[in-house]
Length: 229
Image (cartoon, rainbow, N blue to C red; front, side, top):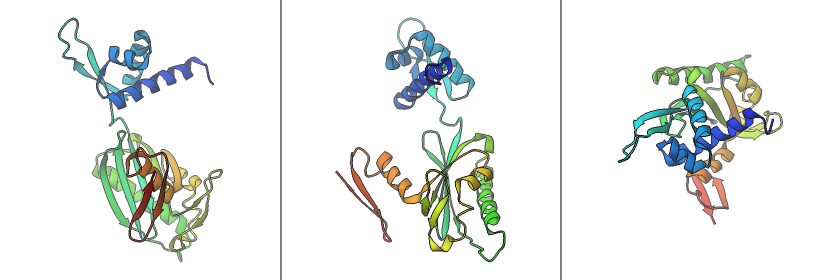
């Protein structure tokens, strides 16, 4: 609830996290100057973030005079996030740290067994198997995965998370790719969106459209086309 101590604490910690992600390694005094928060508030919030493993102390600063300040930095490996691109002919999975640095990437063939009476369960088993394999290869476990984002070649209904339409090779698997089914299959937060929408968002955040207030994204057979203003 807005205005509660918990809400204020979360807001302060988010400000500190944003400062660390943007500026890199900082002292508590640096954080106080950057965010406008008082030094006691910063110290309390930083200790809580350290306990959550979201930030870590890196040792003393190189200041020439006075007591050496302890430097703090964002712990980008506290958790990991995953993106899964569901295509008509292949499945692409990328694993990244919290800074968006991709640490693993795999492509798997899409196997659709429509004649099999448990096609939906088989597809979810396939996705789980690929994820388990990727985690094992990178010595990670599910407790370290914060979120999985799925890109689906179909129309995702925002209110229900259900698939309204999907490309023909995957027709019949709408229920398997619904938000409810995917959330039940994976022990972490699941985000579901149309694959083209996600591609456009990627270009806007860190691709060819970064820094432009308006752009048009058009996927094509030969690749992607993008115009920015």
